[in-house]
Image 1 (cartoon, rainbow, N blue to C red):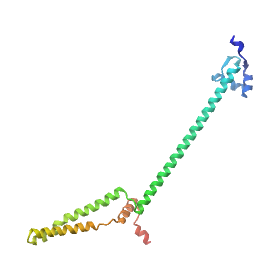
Image 2 (cartoon, one colour):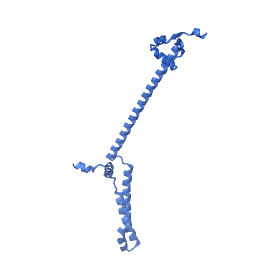
Image 3 (cartoon, one colour):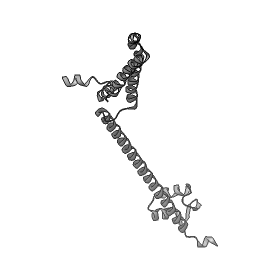
Image 4 (tube, rainbow, N blue to C red):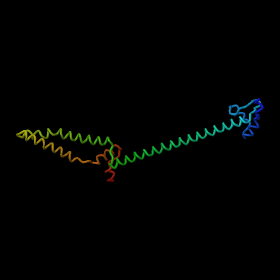
Amino acid sequence: MEKSKQNLQSTEEIAQMFELDPRRIQQLAKEGILPAVSQRPYKFDLVPTIQAYIRYLRERANSRTAKIVGAETAEADKLRAEADLKQSKAKIAEMQLKELEGKMHRSEDVEAVTDDLVYTIRSMIMALPGRLAMDIVQVESASEASALIRSECYKILNELANYQYNDEVYRRRVREREGWGDASEDDDE
């Protein structure tokens, strides 16, 4: 009964409707894309064949769209990554400029300068007994010895109080780290 409702068409007729080569229609049937009612000779029921071909074309169009969208997404990601990289390089260059201008210092430079100051203080304190030994021996009382020691301690504290930030110390450290020559040599030339 179902056979009477079928509208069977040959490979050539289907090829003509779809504007394809008959071999392509046979290939689509072999791939299971077009439902063939019989194979020798190929016969196709018109309505299910048209529906199957439309479904096939829709899937191809969707997959192409997905590939294009995927390519656009990948391109957008690449552009975003390049922009991020350029922005990071600009930030690094800005920080290097601030460092060269003396507006910003690396932590290792601050640590080294601070260590130098601590070692200077330490050496001043360690030298105190040698500087005072002969003077202390010649004083007559403990209060005189105390006043003499206090006086020397005040000298050390005054030297520390007069300590000034020296941006040239940091510039010199930057030049040394970067392997640049002395800037004053360059200025003289």
